[in-house]
Structure formats: structure tokens, C-alpha cells
Length: 79
Image (cartoon, rainbow, N blue to C red; front, side, top):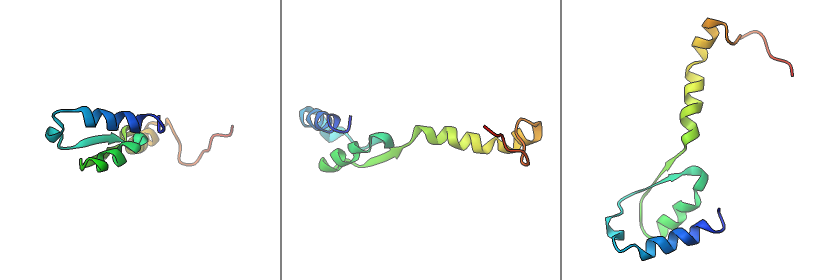
């Protein structure tokens, strides 16, 4: 994807007749190559990392999992 998509995105933007209407590009940080393409066209970017929400929710629920006994703060699982 990193080798092919920058070229395709650049061609798409070049062929877009309404490029002046693009005010922001939201980029999945796993496709960070799109940031360089957007910069080339002067389009501001905002990074988005979808996995961040699930990571945050997992951390936020740790106290509840401790209280309910799903996990323990004193016992480690051996594999």
C-alpha cells in the first residue's frame, strides 16, 4: 500500500476538479503516507487512529474489571 497508494492518491487529487473545496484530509495513521501527499497539495491533515478508542476503553474499564473479579491486581497469568 505504501508503494502504490501515494501515487494513486496524488493522481486522484490532480484530476479532482473541485480540489479547492477540500478543506481537510482525515488520515488513518496506518496510512501516514497520505499526509505527505496532502502536504504536497497544501491540504491540512488530521491524524486518526481507530485503535486508540479501543485501547482507551480497555484501560478505562480496568477498575470495573478489578471490582468484578474478571482480572486481579495480584495474580499474573502464566502461559
